[in-house]
Length: 451
Image (cartoon, rainbow, N blue to C red):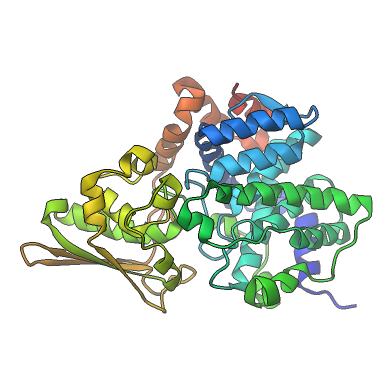
């Protein structure tokens, strides 16, 4: 029987050797892992996530996997669920515009937890993150998602299963089974929780990681999978099309893996805000203005962003999915980090008034998977009659428009300092810089366990 795309993908996961991985891919994976740990630590401090960590500590049996920031060691499925949920809660987790949404938060927590459970090395965990990330991004890139579907979590399940399978020593055939099982266990979600700000949305990657690890174990129990899990979901239920050829096109282990083509978030909100906010900040740098100077702001964005038009979000999560709020906060508050979206900011009268003057238009040619067309346009009509315009194709922090190393380390410091303290922040940064040299992943996780 001829190989299909899933055979090729499973062989890539199971048979890629550490020696095959380009040093630039390994370096990228170290940076992605550090960034993801920072997002987890910051999110772990939210009250619902602290409560969840405490609940899991009572529900899980003893384990070797760390609940970051809380001092608990539990079973890998539970650690993954809590850590991935925390890591997405402040919208600071990295992503990939080529497909797959936010691959790291869907693969890194599970890879670390399974690696801890099995006593794997830092290099083993990094390799599993790299191959799992590749699976998520490629399945995502091959998919045309239905407009009402938010696939956050769905693509991630197969990537967590792939990472777990690699760490558990599965061959290609076993890996394929685990990945197919995972697709049939994937969460299915709409955009409604994001827009309403219902924090059940933050469980998407947590549920995904839990199910991905379970898929690997259930395959060992003898459960069977359908022949083509991704096509089953994305040609019917969740998508309007799925292209298997796109999954394997260009697949290899050279210096151009998807983890090297990611973006790091420099604004604490949904990606669809990022090109818009960059355009606003470009205008402010060129010639500063404040809210009182603004008559109106017209934003042009991809069609999906049309659902993110509420100028008065009711809570922190909803604010992160409101383009008018984010634009107004950037102008009035001068910042777009985590503090710009805290609950106490939402009732700021100046921000609310300016948000009402932000209108949203869509351009059907705009698509964040494209790099040959603008991702956002902004036109600011000033009260004195001047019209200021800017457009952005690649937002800051994207691999094609990278942020400086110091800025990324500054982001990690901001996200993790309250959990770790200044001295330990530097220890974690140093340890992460040589993650592939660690004989046991616990050498890193013991620094960020907390409690």
